[in-house]
Image (tube, rainbow, N blue to C red):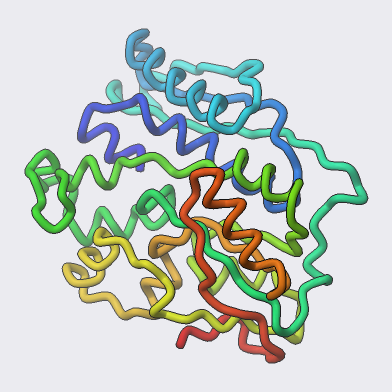
Length: 275
């Protein structure tokens, strides 16, 4: 995704992505992110560009409710091209031991709730770059199917789910949470379901975003590979008892999130079944 930021010369959003990929993982344990630190490596230190990058990191921390307590900037001429950089970071969170989410409480009949994503988020961009040949694409051209320029849609920051999920955890028993990142549905949802159970996902319940339909059509990609690479419009999944699903969705909707039941847990050993 950084490559896209270079191409568009827009650097104030990738910091949000960096924070999001850390804090969205932390919340899967039921923990509250406390602090974040960043690391920026540049080929040449352009102060305004670095300030823009850090502004994105700070915005991500605001959205996550954690503190940006420090960081490191390394100028490495000859290692990075002058106009490029790398960005990394890590977060620390905390949760009472008794409140750590335990996927072993998941059982057959539990509902799987999906939270809407804001777009491609922060994984699958090697494939995205190849499909659209981004280095030679007109990223600023308006795309009718997307309602925005392609570059703008692809650079949309990863959604940070920390605050609404923390609010949900205070109201409803959530059994497990999975952050849908690299590996899509097939590799991430099973991490939140114990052995001996499958997640049956209702394909029609997943509200696939237009950008994913476009990627699939332009790239000639199979449905399974799409769901094994991208979030497809669902950035987080959680397992709750069927009896509390409506209350969970209401709590998430009240917090400003779009949430919907996308499947259920059944006995089995396939992991994820898309039907």
